[in-house]
Length: 264
Ligand SMILES: [Zn+2]
Ligand SMILES: [Zn+2]
Ligand SMILES: [Zn+2]
Figure 1 (cartoon, rainbow, N blue to C red):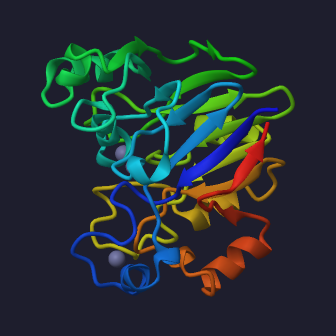
Figure 2 (figure 1 turned 180 degrees about the horizontal axis):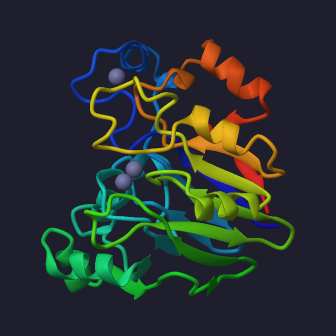
């Protein structure tokens, strides 16, 4: 049996969010149960594989995994890699899968370069459609549109298990036809749920994401079980008693929660 465990469900900067006094952030400061770590999952299929190396990784993992798959070079998805270095667990040749461009960034820039130099990580290039066979599952990366200013690219990952398939798409600028078909093509999808609506922040055009409301409409007739992750601290879905949560769940969707596990 292969299982995906959800390790974190927040946008890169987590909940609470530094410098924010909004209701969701204050609730998380007062009640640790409302805290959310940055979006990440762990696949167990005989080996253990981390997807997204978040700044919260030391709370998310107790042990060094057998490999790590990176999605892209933003705060919540890359910086946790530093915890595999000598100031922390001093990992021994952890296989780290990344696009060729992201691999170059890691190889050429401190402090990440030290991970390569010290043998903490073993960088492996992957890209669109180059499936990585693991013990019981296989992992296939797909390029998705996310900040064209990010030349190293962004990957979504499809994991095919013995019985079911899962797509992990934590960040995408919009639900393009292609992104939608990737979602419709799997049994379970963990989907970018950064914003519920466009009025949550005043610089939404600088940080485009499909709103959960628009994704709910687009995917209303999909057979895929859709869980939203990567929630921004402003997202009303963070409050379990919100109208937004009620609308989401009555439409057959869910918010992903840390500790949830999905059998594949
Ligand atoms: Zn992100
Ligand atoms: Zn906040
Ligand atoms: Zn990003």
